[in-house]
Structure formats: structure tokens, C-alpha cells
Image 1: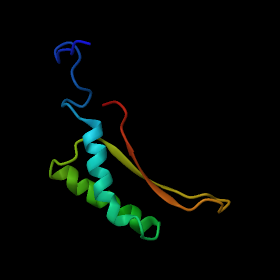
Image 2: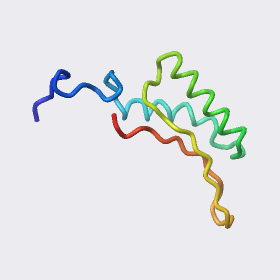
Image 3: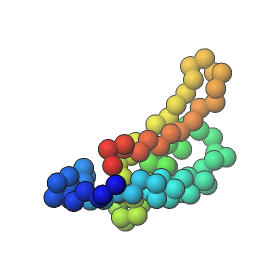
Image 4: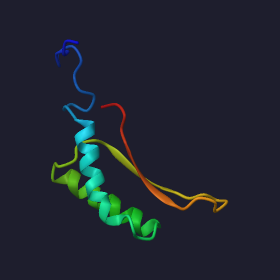
Length: 87
């Protein structure tokens, strides 16, 4: 399949983003948080670290950090980092 020129279809965010590489990098950053209690403080720590990585240019993909809680209590709470799919 031939590659398309940027003149015909420029990158959505103005720069090429390699999603797989950035996702792998983010997963390595998040490993240190695996055994911590899932709450709003942890969500803030993760958000702050990812924003700092973005500031330094090591992450360019847009993301959201979401705290998921099961109201019935059948499943444990989890923090999810959602990467933009438009890249």
C-alpha cells in the first residue's frame, strides 16, 4: 500500500504520532502505580506525570485519565488512560 503524502492528508494534530510507541512508553510509566490504592489521588498523580511527560515532549498523543468504579462493588476500581484514536 503506497504511503500518502502529507499534502493530501496532513496529520490530524499537525504532527505524526506513532500510537504504538507512545502507548508502550505510557505503559512503562504506569507500572510503578500497579500496587497502589485506586482513588482520586492516584488519578491525579498519573495525570500530573503524563502532563509532565507531554510538557517535555516525550508524549505527544492526546489522552484522558479516567477513574472507573463499579457502583455495585463487584469489580475493583481501576484507572484507565484513554488515548485518542484519531492519530
